[in-house]
Image (cartoon, rainbow, N blue to C red; front, top):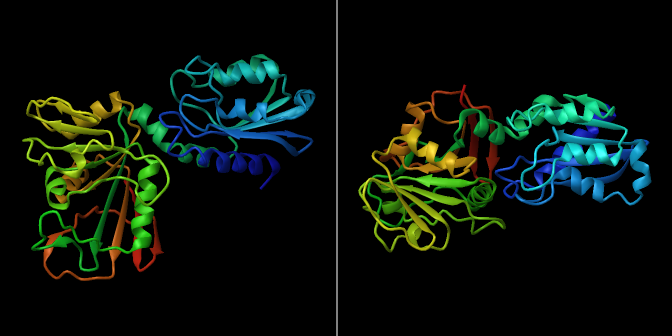
Amino acid sequence: MNFDQEMIERCLVLAEKGRGFASPNPMVGSVVTHNNKIIGEGFHQKFGGPHAEVNAINSVKDMSLLKESTVYVNLEPCAHFGKTPPCADLLVNSGVKRVVIGCIDSFSEVSGKGIEKIKNAGIDITVGVLENKCLDFNKRFFLFHREKRPFIILKWAESKDGLLSPANQEKGKPLWMTGKESKTLVHRWRTEEDAIMVGTNTAIMDNPSLTARLWKGRNPLRVVIDRELKIPKEASLLDGQVKTLVFTEKKRDSEENVDFVKVSSVQLKDLLTELYKRGVQSLIVEGGKRLLESFISEGIWDEARIFVAPISLNTGVKAPSLGEESLSQQVIGADTLSIYKRS
């Protein structure tokens, strides 16, 4: 790995610190070097705040070094005015000698315009360092703008004999099959994504909170499908503690932190379009079986995370089938986690 690649890798490490906070902006990190030594670095810490390049430039103690410095960034600097001024202008005005970019930003308001500004200023520029890795790193952002819907992650846990839940589950008392390590990991995931969705039966039978109680970070937007408004008012999902969106075919006034959205029919594509309009860039779908299988059958999913617990239920609800080969497997406590990507 050469020096440019090492610095783009460092940009990605910095950018990762913004996961769960930068959305709906992409996660971006930036490094400033002088004579192959890091003299400044930064990342996009939260939506609406300064971008990575701003934080990196501002962290440089001796600004006179910038005219002989290189700025690294994993994503093309923005060229438009949003909540902050264009980063491409900042780099030009800072007088840096060279800019190295991981990948182009395909977002229509950027898409090559930042690179063009930097080139026109006579700054040496290199584009495409660790390009595929940089593209994959912000796959949620790119898919959101390309397909006009959230990046969708299917998630469930099943017993080693392939069942989602026991045959005679008592209402409001779900069986948590996986161990504490897996549960903690799931709560971490919740802080990293914009929203989390369940269907009516899961909301009634499991009475989930869908919060990130076991991990420090933000709670995702809770999304519930309740076509006939069957979920009881005392359900955890309607407690108003976390912002919640309920899709329903019935009329009901919204309450504090709970928004009831009347739709003519509960069609996945229509619901996802509504989430797109609301800026929801990523969505975890946690169940139940009917909802999961709807996403699978319609081919509207991007990644699946499936835990297999070391217990047998013998009888119960059969887990969905993806019909895909897993990309990776890892052991989480006593459980096995498989990651799938839709082909």
